[in-house]
Image (cartoon, rainbow over all chains, first blue to last red; front, side, top):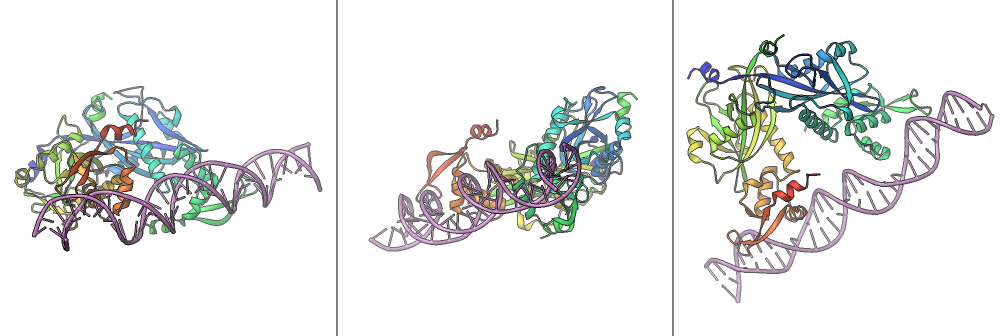
Length: 225
Length: 225
DNA sequence: TCTAAAAAGTGTTGCAAGTACACTTTTATT
DNA sequence: AATAAAAGTGTACTTGCAACACTTTTTAGA
């Protein structure tokens, strides 16, 4: 068999990425959903998705989809799972790889979102989605919550310098449950990669709150060996 | 745009599954590797792989690849990750989803393995593999080891009734490090889904060892709520 | 200037889980 | 009867996690 025949006897498929784009603002997590204005499933709610293009890495395709919709680059983005059931897209056979991303709701491009017929929906109010997108969201949420207990997921959602109160609000939003303030601060104190800057933020409190910063070098260093 | 056009303007790709098939016997984990007798990369070592076919779920494709090579069905098998770098397969663009499986080295079909030019290689002796297969193995191993700390990965590798010594040997092989016998037995005793059968195994020891059984109903029940 | 309000900040105790560690019991074999 | 080989067993220490409430600081407004 020639090299070309080795490949060509096998079928090809559309490869999609579906992005579970979580937005964070004021202690709440939202999910970016699109109302489809095309078939199949026109009018129904779906995740932000797109097709992988020729010459495009699959991770880059996911980044592109998020950027096209929100104008945001350089996000925290992770692959969740690949869904390859035969009938999952009733239109044609499509293999879809799900990614989740976390974006700052203060920074996204409102025009782009509106132009795509997209809307931010708070987690408890998520409607039923098309195809297997409900399952994708559930899988992504579980994966993100697990990761948040292990690594500093979502630090990119905070300003460069942030207070511990802000950080706690972020984690409470991600995990979906309240955290004890003293225990939280104890845990953060053990992480040498979250360091006090010496600056004080007075905008959110009368007393003033110490500002902290995420030190990526120290964080990466913890896993080098 | 017609529904068909919506799909057809996008490219299609070959979809592969690559299987990290771990075999267990006598306290050691091996990996099933193939020496490729076709281009590209003829003569080099690779994972067991195959292409997803029309009308075939991707999970089923992975099961089929393992079955074609070992004759074994109904294994513990989990999706690890999808690799979609543009140049990962130098022949053509192929998106590959990696799965890991755990099989019993006493049960596989030797003829099938030989016919496929495949060999079991013990973990420390794994050679360099083609493409990004080295990374796949590393990812799968990390994933399996994490899972083994959380759930009873690999119970299917043991006989229906097994001794705690056998179970410990399995976990030591998976995790790649020795485990304290007393601590291990304490941990197992807390798992109500691993239950004593009342039978005694005398083949492996003079004193005789109590036989245990994995109770799937009790295990699944632990996560129903 | 005194008071009230709002957010930041701070320790201790108990419990559970994990880890380190070594000897006794049982029985088949010689 | 002695030996060998594997099974089986308990305690003390450490560590991480969870529960829990008051004080400090400062500004805004009376």
